[in-house]
Amino acid sequence: MGVLDGNPTDEPMHYGEVFGVWSTLLATNGMIAAHQIHLNHTGDQDLANLIQESIQQAQRDVKEIESLLKDNGIGLPRHLQSVLRRKSRTFQQGLACRIRKLLLPCQRKLLQDSFHAVQ
Image: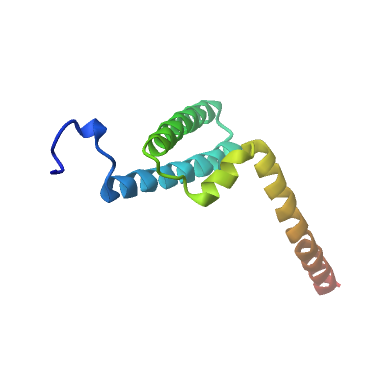
């Protein structure tokens, strides 16, 4: 039984294809996160619309890639499964809250140090 025997759509994915698809999935999820950050910091409405369109397209791509992996019996990366279970908005708000809690003591210390330096 050779690699090119039969219909290629009926053949299982080989490790090179799996690696490529996983890499694409991870890169696309990274792009979505980066575009969401850009969207939060843009002031131009036209640019915001363009970024929003690219986020939506990337999310459609992720759904296709995930279904391809699932159809071939390949599990999603573990950290993606936990992130995908949560709604992205809730996850972002929780992350922002944790960052604020971590930064607040540091900001207070910096303010106190700068206040004492001025006096």
